[in-house]
Image 1: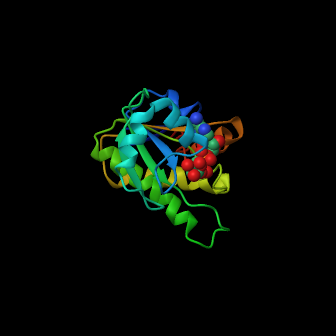
Image 2 (image 1 turned 45 degrees about the vertical axis):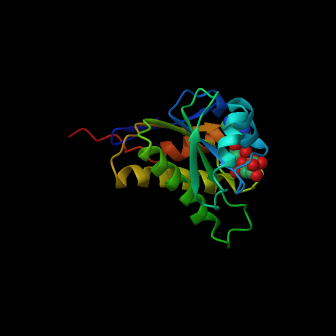
Image 3 (image 1 turned 90 degrees about the vertical axis):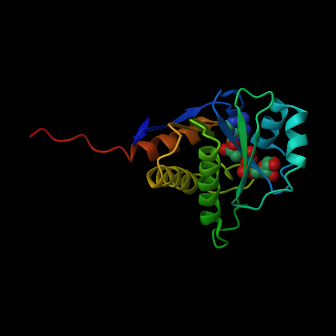
Length: 183
Ligand code: AR6
């Protein structure tokens, strides 16, 4: 658990579809019409009405995000973010991934969300190297929180497995302020 101002950041091994937060982020594709991985799990859990709303959105560019309702999910909203497909690192992948986290935080703040949960966007089918992706996720969320005080007071990084959780833990712990020395 890492405090940044009034906000707490934490990593958990958890199925993101079970979280009763204000917004969960989906690792979507540009069609926004569903797929495998976390996208498939979110659409299955939310039900057909989520797809119906997504069909009205006209897709989404890589690096951007769009917000829908959560329907049958315990989460109030879904923020569909489109991460980059890893192509070796020379195609703006890092900046596009950072943009996903920034846009998702902006949309969540605009919707007055207090709590938000992210999956490891692009780290599955899109093959983004996990360690670099985790560094980008944590640093971008922290930068967003530091730039503008908003509604968000709890950020969860939802990890599907323990190796991913360990990467987030190391990244979050590495940013803890060192304990102050006694005078
Ligand atoms: N809860 C939390 N994390 C999960 C869950 C879950 N229920 N399911 C998977 N993960 P991926 P991408 C983790 O492939 O790489 C889809 O077909 C998973 O272990 O879901 O951004 C879309 O439609 C991994 O760490 O997303 C796109 O076409 C992370 O979520 C494409 O995949 C992301 O893996 C997007 O690929």
